[in-house]
Length: 606
Image 1 (spheres, helix red, strand yellow):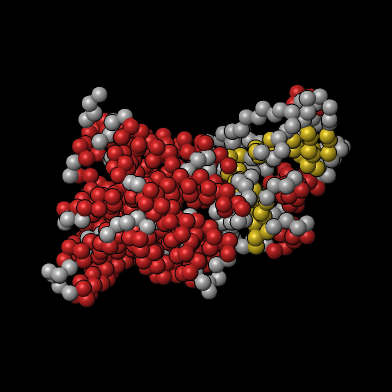
Image 2 (cartoon, rainbow, N blue to C red):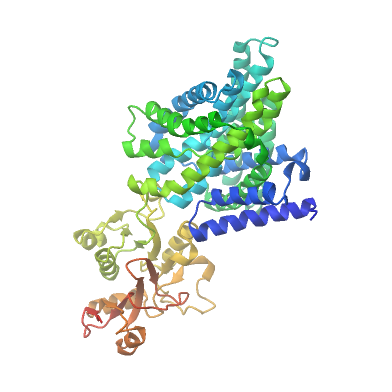
């Protein structure tokens, strides 16, 4: 079947989003499915032939895509995370990158049998551990904040560094012996990098100034940012090839830490664009791979790939981080997780043919070696990051944790029950007095304003899968839910019903500006508090074959308020809401708020 360009682009978009959704559904690393989709649609079925379909546009499309991806990565780099991981990140970048280059080059020459020029270029490419692969893995593995910061900062900063090392190596090979001295080349390169950094920082500060003083309307902010990223990338590349990657990364870091009121909305917009670009660019690169080139590899090549993964990376991390405050668990995780992605493939795809034209015949092995490294690391690290992080106690325990915002006698009673049932819980309130009963019951608490910058920096919420906003202020509850919706998901945020007006009242707060209504319409703040002081209690009921949900419904006391359902042995937590449909089965545990005449706990066995 013959595909025109528009069909190819539609197919790439469809495959990319399908792979992302399937990865989320099956809880698999998205990058693995994207790689498989590209191989299937390209070398496998021949539906996508990037060199033919896009022709000379392919390098430009990939370059712009990577620049936007790196900008988004910089936009999500928060300086407060760097404060926690600063020493380790500095070592990984300023000591780790050169050490990785030296080790990778040496292994390529002595183990892989490559000539020194090609080995040096291969070593530069292997420095890259880019965000195109790291970010999807972090999203899937749900690491704790500190180890995630190490991997995120290293990956995003090392991406342009590795690409620039490859550029330096290539230009030295081209001009050695016939151009300016190496010292002059390095000084010119340094000036170009300073100019690119200044350009990226200046663009970020300029946009922040324009946005902060209202010189740009809200609807124009996202397209202006996207256009500026492209312009900065192109101008910086005029100073030095691939300097645009550094400039766009710096621009993202500056803009992302400018404390703009609308920065969260801008991050979400850029995240949507980035997901499409990561999917599309990775499928393009894998579809462009010629499987026959892998046949050029021999056992030396296999040994080289293994040495890079199991020898060079661990040595790089453990040596460069000596004397830092990184724990041995954090160093071990970082030493293992180093997947290569789009930038490595793109750089290899650009320089390998050029080296072959210069007479370095073994450069024909460069592209298959890099792609083999990408495939090996994507599969090895993609499938193992969760398991390794859990073994090292660096991953969030589960996504069943409940974040309760607003301490009251009733919410403290609920938090205690959740804790007793083995469910992680964290209670947040700005009143130390209201938190006192929770603290006395051993419930983890955070004293402070939930919407403050301090809470964003200090709260570890990776193991929190649900939000319950239970303050007496309905508008504040809605604001908290809106703030955390993008992080937890709309289906997992709940707030107490608004006492002032009914759910469907047209004068009520818009559904898009609040969370799901928890429990029932009668469970507003004052209603729950009144019932609590009347002696109502939270009642657990275990369902069995002999006592099923129908029996429970018949025997349930009048006025009882359903709170949540625990599936089986803690497999899933479902809060009761009009948006949740329950189908309880044997082995489930129901929790309801019932009048005091009922026993506190009912458990019926066969």
